[in-house]
Amino acid sequence: MENVLEVINFARIEDIPFLGTCGGYQHAALEFARNALGFSNAENAEVKPDAEMPLISALACKMVEVSDQIYFQANSNIESIYGENTTNEEYRCGFGVNRDYLQIFDGSEMKFTGFDSEGDPRVLEIPKNRFFLGTAFQPERSALNGQPHPIIQSFLEAAGNACK
Image (cartoon, rainbow, N blue to C red; front, top):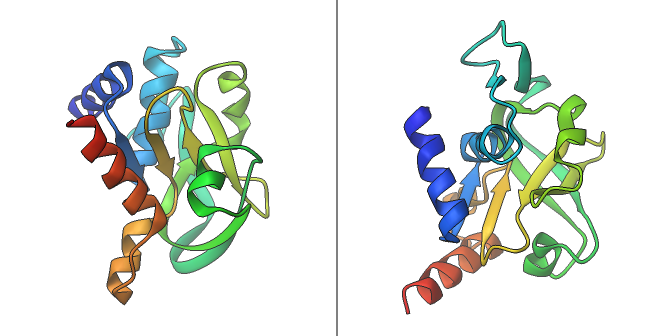
C-alpha cells in the first residue's frame, strides 16, 4: 500500500492525470490526508482494523453488484464531465471514505463533490489539477456493457493532453 500511496502522491504533486476507482479512490483520500494534511495516523480499516483514525472504513452495507444514485456539487469537475448534476452508477465495494472525517478536508485542495442519497462521499477531486478524480463506484464497469464512460473518456483525454 505504501508504494501505491507514493505513486498517488507523485501524480498529485506533479499534476499527472490520475483516476482512482473504488480502492484507488480510498487510497487517494488516504494519501492526501497523510501527506497534504499531516494526519499520519489516517488508516484503512480493511488493512488495519484497530486503526486510531479509520479514514477508510467498512460501509454500513456492502455495495456488491448494486447501483445507486449519486448527486454532484454544482460547478464541480465531475458535474462538468457528466453535463448534469446526478447519475446512477454501479458498485462493487465494501469500504469507503468515513464521512465522520470529512471535516479534515475542509478548506483543502481536495474536495468531495459527489454524494449518495444518504450523504456518504462517493467522488473526490482536486480542481486545480488538470485531472485528479476518485470515485467509490467503478466507471470502468461500463465496458462490461460495451459502453464508453464519460469519466474514462475525460481521463484519457487529459492523459493524452499531458503527453503533448
